[in-house]
Image 1 (cartoon, rainbow, N blue to C red):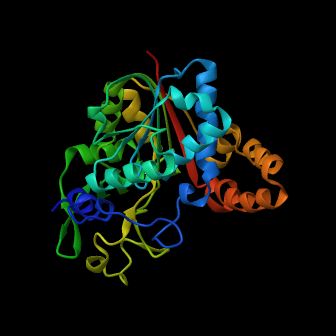
Image 2 (cartoon, rainbow, N blue to C red):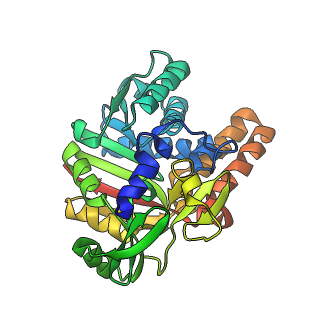
Image 3 (cartoon, helix red, strand yellow):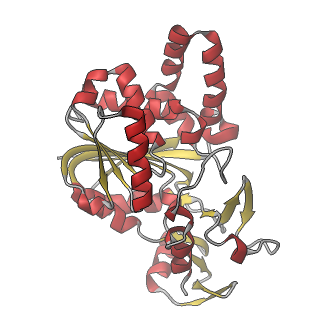
Length: 330
């Protein structure tokens, strides 16, 4: 089968890695910014409030997370909106786009336990189900979770048993690889369709996503497997891919130029790409820490500061992870 189908089955098949509940963080296979500190969501909440203040996001606009998994990220955002501007919880609408029914059920239960009947959470299985006038979309590590084709010097890959064979001719993959000056590496599948679905779902919105990668394509393969906080290159001869199939995460570096082009083709304006550390500081994560110091004291401040350092320090997540931002005007 073509590699993109193999990867889709690995991640999203009936028994795929993302099809069932997975722990993230210490007890899982990897950490994310969300599992590191609630102040990640707090910074986004502060940004959402700034969008309302500047008039871009209506007070009754939709705040929607895409691919929420546990729902912790959106819940953190809501908690900080309550702290910073509680009256907005009476007017803003909250939604999650999540393809898997069992995860939607987990998210609904988590929100019920966290907020009772105060917050109404709307669920959509895809962006194509959502129609709204004004929204803020947020996602964390979504573009690296799209299936991809593997490309090497004019040929795409297929998987036969446990062997990866580069002998497939695919005009679109070849054209895309040439466009991004790749003679080898990953070619993501589905960015164009995803961007178009978002463009059609809402008349006016801002979309922010955090992911790892660079604007220009890497000159080599970055595909890798995460299992129990260990990382293995996909082509490492020592790993047994059949044993890790659907039981571990598989991912690759994002080529943000491809994401940018997909959105611009759908009529959505690219705003900026910047390091996560810069984005979070500009959104106000340090101001939130100062509020914590004033309200909860020095000990709580120092404890949270150590977590936030992982988000913003260059040698942790701060530089390797990027924030990409888009806007669609009404």
